[in-house]
Amino acid sequence: MSDLKVKEKYNWPVTVLLLIGLITIIFPLYMTIVIAFKQPSEMTNSISGILSLPKHWSLANFAEAMRVTDFWRSLFNSFMISAVTVSISVLVHSMIGYAVGRSKAKSKWYNFVYLYIVSGMFVPFAILMMPLVKQTAQMGIANIVGVILCYVVFYMPMNLMLYSGYLTNIPIALEEAARMDGATTWTTYWKIIFPIMKPMHATVAVITVLGVWNDVMTPLVIMSGSGLNTLPLAQMTFQTQFGTNYNLAFASYLLALLPILVFYIICQKQILNGVVNGAVK
Image (cartoon, rainbow, N blue to C red):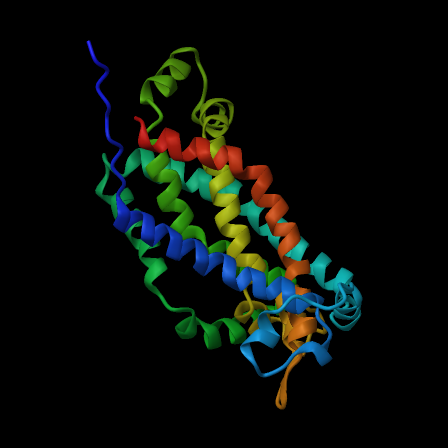
């Protein structure tokens, strides 16, 4: 019996789209790295001058960018805001997601609460900007504390939707068995539900920290005048009325990228587990 040869079929439209997407991602990253290592004298108006490799690979731009942006202090401010925001979001939003997610199918009130909170995703920040500036100033929290509180509220709608959706993959029988053993709702949540939602915790943490780490507007409008800078705010010093120092700016962008990249790599396994668990019920 002759072996049957199966011809492999390629989905060329999808392959072409993937290649275009890959180029779209790699090209800006290549430009960022190349320009960050170049000296200003190597920058010309021609395309070949911008895309060419540096003649001498030097870390001088990185050192100067760290000096101009007061890197370590700005990094500490960004890290503290991101860490506290993520910690509060995971603790508070997961509890709200559990309470609302388990009850919205049984109660119209909880269903209304769910829809009301999730609808906050459709409110533009521009509408909230001026009221928030005035309110935080009157409350005396026009500082890092006010920024953290705003972030916790801003990311509540999306995180609530993620947590309540993930709960549909957790059998209610686990909670019923715990109650049969005498566990309270509080004990059931912390001993059973919270550890099971670990993949979603990682997903929420990465999504939240990406938004917080790269945000400019919220710290800009709330912390203006406080003398404190986050990394995105400090990087605005490279843009002046007369131009932009691209060499220092791109070097600073790469420095700011490294911590968040390390955080994503650490949480990557849990995020993949969350995707798989969400797809297979």
